[in-house]
Length: 382
Ligand SMILES: C[S@@+](CC[C@H](N)C(=O)[O-])C[C@H]1O[C@@H](n2cnc3c(N)ncnc32)[C@H](O)[C@@H]1O
Image (cartoon, rainbow, N blue to C red; front, side):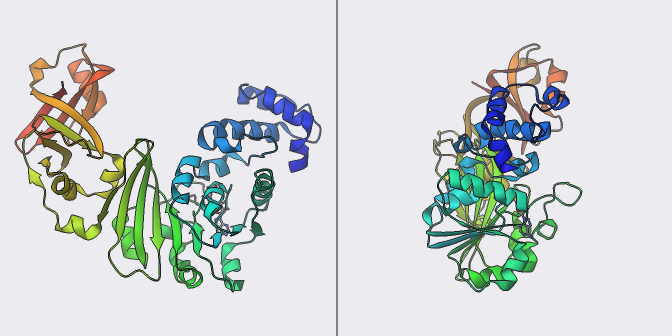
């Protein structure tokens, strides 16, 4: 199939239809007897996705897999972040998929092995890596079979388990992933001192720590404040506390680093809203370090269930949004005025608030509907 798709005329047709409506294209007959319209649309879709998600693949000769494999791939940006953490001699990705992670993560290694059970997908990756001038050993096998036969050791073993069950629903428990990490974790640690696993942002961190042995680091990776991945690092050498990094890529912020023990021992100070209000980034919220944030930055928390913080002095290095605010009452919220509405620990959702007060969405100003220890409050940015 690869050679047929790479035929010059087929490629010309694909490039000429990059902006064509794909539904109407699918209704047409393919102009090429040996390539179906579905295969052509798959390539167009791939190029469209690549523009945003992996622009490094917008090259002549690159082939794209079906949509599910595109969706399951990491983005170039998160893969690039992970590549900065890992180095060594021998790298193995046991769940290659479309190979985006493998391409980036193996940059600082001399010998690279990719395992993938899907034959067609691995063929596509092999073709693409040739175009990208990257060498690897490509093994089309179930990773469990590979692990049973394998006698080698590696500096880093990487896995990004498939997150869909047989009904193609998304799943978030480790035992529902493919492969089942809980079943193979000991085997993995017997062939490497560093095992790195990418997991869904929806996975619960406390659950992870309770079921996975030898975790020494967890990174919560967000891109522009949208949490994309939880990356777990396991090691035999692990002895101390688990280090957790909250990362927000593309916002020019440095990572917020803590240990779980620190949060357990931290105490939040509570207070009513002062001049500045702080809204933590999503990676911080995912980490659940609500007391530590108050303690580290010397900020008061508004309420045990309101994850908003406040101070009179501005703390610039806070990992999140900072707004200068004043308290307003119901009557000061004028009908038809325009605000970005934020609802935190408040009984109404932004949509309901908009309706109730007759507000318009957008503009430069913010209205925060929330609760302090004294009760419900409305804060307006100044
Ligand atoms: C989420 S995708 C990996 C995406 C990849 N990290 C990337 O950035 O392109 C997971 C892949 O693991 C493969 N996989 C799942 N279970 C496997 C198993 N037991 N043996 C080999 N491959 C497996 C799936 O076929 C799928 O292609």
